[in-house]
Image (cartoon, rainbow, N blue to C red; front, side, top):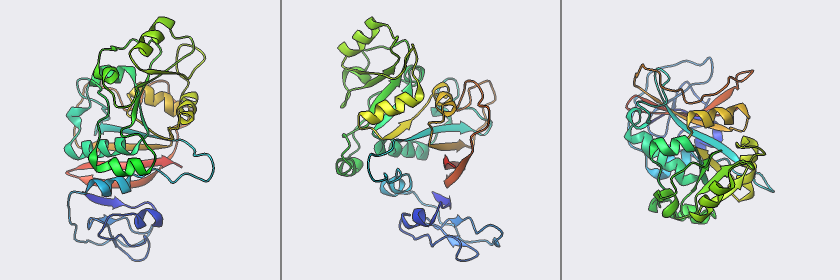
Amino acid sequence: MRRLFPVTEETAAQAPAGGARTPGRGPEEVGPAGGVLRPPVGGPVRAAAVVDREWSLAELAAAYAYPEPAPGAPRPWLRANMVSSLDGAAQHEGRSQPISSATDMRIFGTLRALADVVVVGAETVRQEGYRPARVRDEFAGARAAAGQTPVPAIAIVTASLELDFTLPLFTSPLVPTLILTGAAAAPDRIAAAERAGAQVVIAGEGMGVEPARAVQALAGLGHTRLLTEGGPRLLGQLIAAEVLDELCLTLSPTLTAGNAQRIAGGPSVAVPHRFALASLLEQDGFLFGRYCRS
């Protein structure tokens, strides 16, 4: 894996062994994996040797660390993790796995290991066959030191609560599965979810969930490092509500054609939301970008 673009001096200081120098101190900077970093704007570009290697999980965790909380009450930070083909498909035949890769899945697992809670739409739970998060021994010490549970909770966004409560997501999670729904949700479905061991969180006045209320409700439960894995409809709602802080996007070197969804769906926003590139990694033609609210 190669780091193509460092964020700031602070990010470079946190880089893995191999030592990225402070950006902007020469015509060319050698990244932590030997990769070429972007030169200063307007600066010269010349060739450099590139050494490609697999990063350790600790290095990935440092590269994707959540922002340090400000003094006082921590502000929740919501990041999304999605994958897209070159022609904009978020899935192939209903699933994201065909356009993913082994490195993409390592980053997927790392992002989960850093999060307090994983927020996901009910349809994605059904299509992707979601299971409870599993313990990752490599991250156990870091999670304990950060005051986190052994695994992130899974929080399902659903208006109808039409879920199969016999699935492992409800019968055998290490931490209770959360269900985010609206105040007008059917009482019998809420009761069924609670009997199954899920914790129901009201985050909307009507049938559906209001994204800003969902974020604050999760923060009220102590979950400030938030991760959403979609699907496209949920991500579109989060974008429209302007609660998304960061997008981790894997650009897969694949073409699918067809009519698959994009990574975000729903009504268009009035004005496109501008995000800034924070970092960019490459492995086997896959690009792994982090974009933060500018």
